[in-house]
Amino acid sequence: MKQPLGVILAGGQATRMGGGDKGLLPLGSRSILSEVIDRFEPQVAGLALNANGDPKRFADFGLPVVADSIAGFAGPLCGVLAGLDWAAEQGADHVVSAAADTPFLPADLVPRLILAGGTQGLALAASPSGRQPTFGLWPVGLRDDLRAALDGGLRKVVQWTQRHGAGTAEFPDDNQFFNVNTPDDLRTAQAML
Image (cartoon, rainbow, N blue to C red):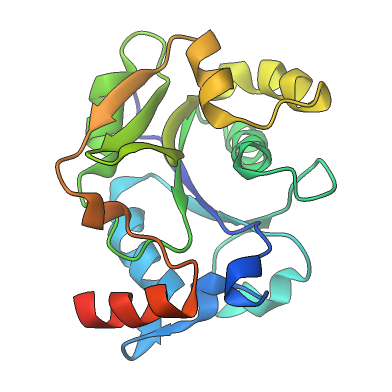
C-alpha cells in the first residue's frame, strides 16, 4: 500500500466547549491543532482539514480545508467522506483520519492502522477504554458505499466499519487518544503537555 493521505476531523460543533473550534484553543504556547498536525503530518503523504464554515480561520496552517458534503453536522463519518472525496481527487487509495482535539495522538498511528487493515485496507484504532472511531484507515474505493449509507441515515462509525470487516489497531495507552471536549479537559491537557 502506498502512503495514505491524512484528514484531520474538525467539523463538529464543540457544544461541550461552548462552541467554536476546539483545535484553535491554546495548548501551551501553540494550539491543539498545531500539536495534532506535528504528530500526524510526518505519517502521511499529504494532509487536509475537514471543517465547516469559513475556511479562512485555518489559513495559518496552510492545509486544504474540505467541508462536509452532507448538511446538518451529521457526525465524523461525514468528515471521513469529505476526506475520501479529497483523496480521490489527489489519486490516493486510502486516507487516515484523526480528530482535531487529540493533541497526543500516537506517532505510529498510520503504520499500525495499515497493519491492521489487512487486504481490505479498513481499520479503526482502539485503546484499553475501547474503540477510537475517529481514528481510522479508510479505502477510497468505499466512498460511494459510505455516501449511500450516510444518505440513508447511518451515523455510527462502528456500524458501517463492521459491515466491511474492519480490522482493529490496538494501542496500549488511552492518553494517546485523550480529547479536549470541555474546559476541564483543556486544563488536563495543559498538565499532560
